Amino acid sequence: MRTDLSFLSVVADGPDDYVVGNGETFVHVPEVAAAVVAALDGTRTAAEARARVLAERGVDVDVEAFVSGLDGAGLLSPPRRPPNVWDRIRPGHVAWLFSRPADAALLLLTGCAIAAALTRPGVLPDPATLVWADSLAFTLAFAAGSWLLVLVHELGHIAAARSLGVRAELSLGTRMQFLVVQTRITGVWAVPRRARYRAYLAGMRVDWLLACACACVLAVTDAPVARLVMVICLAQIAWQFLFFMRTDVYYAVANATGEKNLMADARAYLRRRGGDARRGVRVYAWFLVAGRVLGLAFFACYTVPVTVAICRRSLEELAGPGGWRPVATLAVVTAGWLLYLGVLLRRLIRTRSTATNSGE
Image (tube, rainbow, N blue to C red; front, top):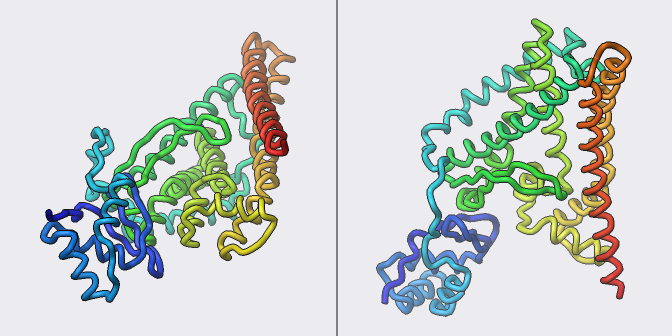
């Protein structure tokens, strides 16, 4: 019986390292295994494919056992996935967003933003002057703006994935037990390694474009909304560099090093307190160790100053005829912090409990 694996993608990913997948599930195989997949194009039986690989590669491969292994991994048939709204976006619809003219336009906009920041110091974000409306209105605008710009960030990933012909799925998820919007682009393994950077970094590209555009607007006029968008976008970029978590920069670093399980391998290296490990794993292990410091820096330089600015305005409004609005603002801020501290305490208890049970 002839076996047809022509629907599988086969992409070189490094020396004697190929990625084979059906768009949903992917495995890493050596070069000779990739040759077996290429031989099983529906015109040969397993025995004929074995003979061809032996003649071309000088390696005798048990093709039937290999095919059985692919079957166990769920790779003998294309995935059955219901269509989603993003499937309607064809590569041609969005490829221009990542073309050389688009790159040149972004570079020009970056230059204009830098010039604006140098000539107009007020362009740079300042949490002390960020609260441009009454405290409650700003708090609601900040929350809505943050979620909206997170969605725009994820739409950047979707556009990049679709420009590469990769399926994208938008969903809600958690990161460090907090609710986040995330884009699933597993199929990016089906494109060459260099092309994956487009999908991994597209969200930050959108954030940077918006931040630069807002800087140019602020150089001409003091638009409070532009200042708010700029602060949120820059914060989102900074967040991605906390790549002791699985952020966009983490995936870019893992792609650059060629490590398939970078975080898991680095954690195992730290648990062993050294030992043999690849250079990329050893280097990333240092970022895991420094992760708490980086997280606290983000917390101290963004979360705390914005909170302080909102609370200061609320207290000023309490001293005047502010009515119930500043009280409502303080209640919202307090509820947010109580939720954060509750989740943090829960994580610490779970971590301690796990460590205690492991010690037993």
